[in-house]
Image 1: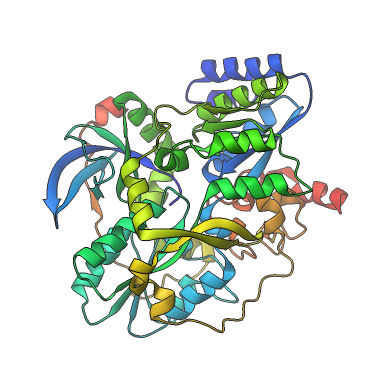
Image 2: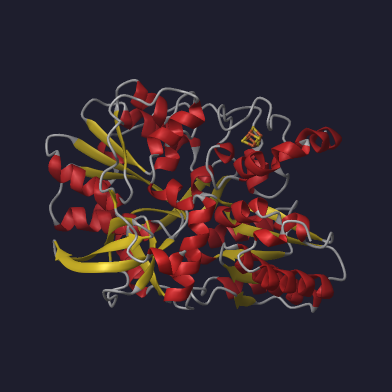
Length: 372
Length: 117
Ligand code: SF4
C-alpha cells in the first residue's frame, strides 16, 4: 500500500485499513469536522488509501477560516489605532479582511503582537498601563475557556486597559446546520476530539438521534482518524446511529467541569455568522453582560464597517463539504498561500491550504474543469 | 493555534492566586495555566492549548504525539517565529519591530532527549 510506511505504526495502520475494507459494502460519505484532522488526512493520503466507496468530506472546523470578515475588519480597524496594542495568535496574521490583513497593518506601523497564550496579552496590559491592549479571541470550544479565564483574571486583578474582541463558535449547532441543509451529503461525522475534551460528549447523542447520523469522537493523529473511520463505517453498515468515543485518552464524557463553569460565567450563547457560511443560530459565544466592559466592540464602538468579500472565493462551499478545494476555479491559480483569496487558503488547518501543500503536483485543475 | 500539544510539568507555582506551571514541550518551555486541571503534579503530562492545560495524558501517548508533531513541523508552527512565517508566506519583508523573539519563548535543551529519540 502506497505511503503506509509514513504511519507511526504501519502494521496497525494496515490492520485498520484492511478492517475498513472488509466491512465496507457500499458508498458512504463521512465528514471530519476538525481542520487538524483534514490536515492529517491529506498529508498522509488517508483519503486515497481508503476503499473507493468511502468519501471524506472536509468540515468547517478551522477557527481561522470561519471567523467572519466583519470581525476581521473590526480587528484591523482597532489594531490601526495609535493607542492600541493588538494581540493575536500567529495564524490570524494573514487572514484577509476587506483588502488588508494584520501583517499589512503591522507593516504600516501599527502595534500588533503575536502571543502564545491570551494570558500573555494580560501581562502586556499590566506592563503598558497607558495603552489599550486588545486580544483577538477567536476559536472553538477548545480556545474559549482560556480566553474566558483571561477576561475573568482581568476583572479580578482590576486590569481596566484590557479587552477582548470576541468571535467564538460552537461545533454542535454547526453539525445541526450542515445536516439541515438540503444539499447535505454527510452520512457520519468524525467529531473534533479536543472540543470534546472541554465540552464532553453530552451534546452529541441527541444530534445523532435527531439526524440518524453516527458521530464518532476522533483525535487527529493518523491512527486516531483511521479508528474513527472504522467505527463510523461499522455503524453505517449495520444501520446504527449513535455516539462513540474513539479518543478516550483525551476525552471523558463529562469534559472539563472547571472549563465549562468558567464559560458559563464569562460568556453567553449567541447567534454567530460563520465566514462563507452565514448565520447559524446559537452557534457562538459573546461576553455576558457582567463582563461587557471587557468587550472590545463596545469599548471601541467599531460600527459602519462595509465588508467586501472576494466574489471568486468558494470557501463557504468548501467549509460545508459541498465542493473540494481543487474544484474551485481559482485554486492554485489566482489563489495561493502567497496571495490567498479566502481564509481556507491561509490557515494551515484550512482545507484549501492542505490541498495546496500536499496535492499541488496532482494537476488539481483537471478535475476543476470537469466540474465546471 | 487549533491543535493542543502535550507537555510535561516541570514546576508549579501560585501567581496572582492562579495555579501556573512551567511545561516542557520537547525542549520549548512555556508558562501554562493549570486552573482547568487543578490536580496536576510535577512530572505529569497534560494536553495544553494556548497556554492552558486541558486534560491529563499518560506519558506514553504524550511522548508519541509529541514525536509525531515534531516530525510534522507542528511544534515549529505552534512555538516558532510567526512573523517570519507570515513574511515568508507573503513573500514580503518582515515588519519593523518583529525581530525579537516572541514573548515568553524559552528554548532549552530537551531533558529527556534519549527517551524521545
Ligand atoms: S482555493 Fe482560494 S478562492 Fe478557492 S475556495 Fe479556496 S480559498 Fe477560496
